[in-house]
Length: 101
Image 1 (cartoon, rainbow, N blue to C red):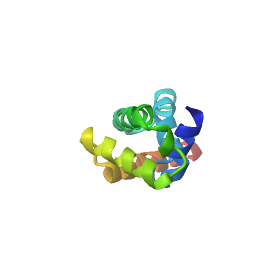
Image 2 (spheres, helix red, strand yellow; image 1 turned 90 degrees about the horizontal axis):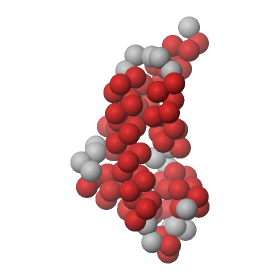
Image 3 (cartoon, rainbow, N blue to C red; image 1 turned 180 degrees about the horizontal axis):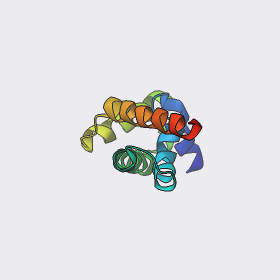
């Protein structure tokens, strides 16, 4: 299971590990956009884990297959993946700035 998760996170290139950690991060830090980030991260995380649960063993070594399966899952969950990633990146930048100020 851990290898499949790794393949999903590292192999796709555009689904970063921090996205999956974002929900926890948002629940422990106080910053602007916390609710939105929490909701987006939950959706992304849910879709990714549904995808991981459904992946066949032969897919785990092929990042392209993993990426395609993950995309399909995002589409099925009606998640605009690019937009969600951008929103989370923006919120993350805000959070980092907020921490340093």
